[in-house]
Image (cartoon, helix red, strand yellow):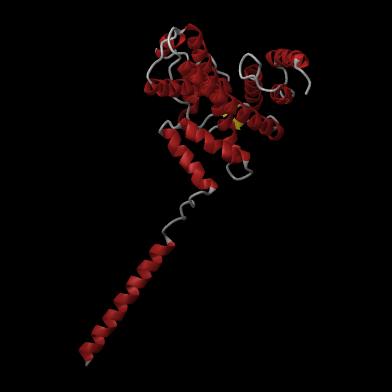
Length: 286
């Protein structure tokens, strides 16, 4: 009987020990991962996709986070502006190249027109996103510094080799066009990132500043970059480019004017403000 009681006590002790161990593990298991679909989940997903070079996907997520008030709005918006600004420039460049090919080709011009229209549509969408992001940023930033948590993409300043064929009217395979698009988008995002730090002619310096996601742009410098890109967007919306209604250009110029109003003691900013005012006067009123 005594042996049985001792055995029972040992079993009870073991059960209690296991229960305490499991309870301890439960207490120390750490924070729950973000729920799928939550802002934190999307933010983490964007950072992982960015490492893979999936810039179009990342841009869509960052724009969504930037447009909705939340814990990631301030973190997402500046880089969403860098990306949409760069992408609008990239797509407009691609549209222009295929427009050249349309005029030069001696064969079927339909594929050139199709790509021209496709990239004009993408340029328009990215440009409009940039304008909306810029308007919100200018209204809320009050010239505060812009912090970036993403690194600057590796890119080449050289034009893709396929441009020579495209602009002389020779169509290239669809797979190569996808590759060219990725290359140009990457390059233009990198350009915008350099400009954001005031180093448009020194990408190596800018890239070093972005290492480990630790770059910060001085508030007024980033506002000036924003205004310059808004000017570019206004030019894109013109009849000979994207042919958007004049109200879209007015909106871009108005946001640029608001941004430049926060930039002090900058002769280049003053000159740009004057140029925008003169251009805006020439636009039809709607």
